[in-house]
Length: 100
Image (cartoon, rainbow, N blue to C red; front, side):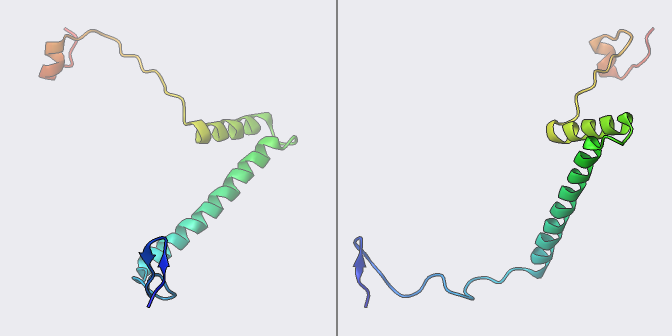
């Protein structure tokens, strides 16, 4: 029937063309849509890079394009928020927002 290969008897079967569960049509369409969106995103990034490199574009526009590239690659920097006033832990837990 089958020959021994590395001590394991080889048998017929296994992966063959057309075997296995057929993909769900919704999954196939979703994968196609994602691939198309990836292509569009790549075009958009190229557009922003070209805008940043355009010597004839206004400097403010080129700067905004550069910021957008940096923010998309590294994320937007965190913004510090300051809160004025004093509140005790008891007021915070009680939901009292008045500074009396």
